[in-house]
Amino acid sequence: KQEGKNGHEYGLLYDYLDFVTGLSWKKAPFERIALDRAEEILDEDHYGLKKAKKRIIQQIAVMALNQKQAGSILLFVGAPGTGKTSIGQSIARALKRPYARVSLGGVRDEAEIRGHRRTYVGAMPGRIMDGIRRSGASNPVVVLDEVDKLGKDYNGDPSSALLEVLDPEQNSTFTDHYMNVPYDLSDVLFICTANSLDTIPEPLLNRMEVIQFQGYTASEKLQIAKKHLLPRAMESAGIAPQQLHISDGALRKIISDYTMESGVRGLKKRIDTLCRSAAVKLVKGENTAVTVGTRQLKEMLDRKPMRHDTAMKTGVPGVVTGLAWTQAGGDILFLETMFTKGEGKIYITGQLGDVMKESVQVAISLVKSMYPDKADMFKEYDLHVHVPDGAVPKDGPSAGITLTTALASLVTGKAVEPTVAMTGEVSLRGGVMPIGGLPEKLMAAVRAGIRTVMIPKDNEEDLEDVAEEVKRQLTIVPVSSVSQVLEKTGL
Image (tube, rainbow, N blue to C red; front, top):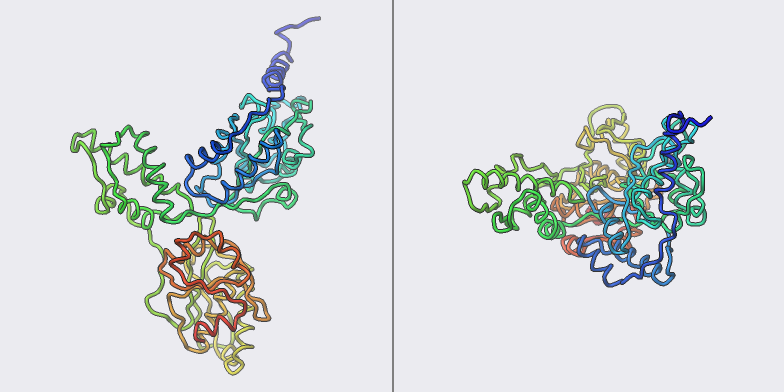
């Protein structure tokens, strides 16, 4: 008996056929790529990011020679607002291909990647196939956003489901559970983005090539604001170019005092706020044109400048400046130590994680061995180690050298020059070991008024990634042992 349109499976079958026939099954012919034009497009849309652009151009050149999709999957890693997602759109424009973005933040169910089997009520295709269908082509540029924020629960592990998608050897026969027929993903250019590598499983990380997106320097942010953010904000607010003028001094002040970030999202918000304030004045007819200088910022932004930690004016025995890396960029922090009358107890405050607490123990052992005549102080007094701000959790090994120097300063009673900062992990044998996030840490040092930074000798190669304007403002001292640091700080 034919039920026709009234059949209970009619709607399900219709949706299935509509989805499968809506996909582009035809292999798209390879478009010839003009490398010069691709470079122009990348420079037009994004200021700076030389390293990332160079790697993208290499990938495009390999594809042009092979006349097909080639090269590894790229993973862009960096702080929020550094242009990771938007550069995917530029790559699609440079390759003359459609663009699709798939957000993976918070995805905990494997079916979100592979789709649901059609036996389930409300079955849907996975996000990958849905993105490809939306693009309308078989060779789009697909940005998989926030791969570091994939979760896992009893519904399976979505990061494991991504393994097949991102493996060029396997993805030519990717089978979505909803479709139940293989689809060739080998022509798709996948680009992944993440804020940090810590939470990405090793097998998934193995399939991708990591490209670090460094934070922008103050002068790069100024150029981005003038060339990209301000014209776009004025256009969206309906303000003509002659109606609003924001001075370079005002933009510099917004960057230094009203934002605290590696990227430019906060800067974009402040510029949008200025444009809205200017729009009110223009519509009321108070002004035919608005000029914004540093004096007008407080009133027009309607907020106080942010409090940044800056180098101490005078040195205090037992207090040393360290450098920290956060997901929003770099920052300085003060390692504070104090002896109080007691019986050798150790107090650690400031929300320090396990790794940092262990660094305190290593620092104490090192200082006891290097200053044997002062070792009894650790028995006769209680030691208190504190790292402000108390409400912000801190962890990681890179404060090891700072802790050791702070304790050495405490037992000798000599202060360390306040414009000297340092970063590095220490070993029990007194070596200074490499750390991560050096470019962001050095930018934070410049912003805080630090003049000399001690870094692990093994991190010297990383100085290539640091902007010249940052290196010019700092004296960078590579060190390989704790004794070198104590000698250079006069302890």
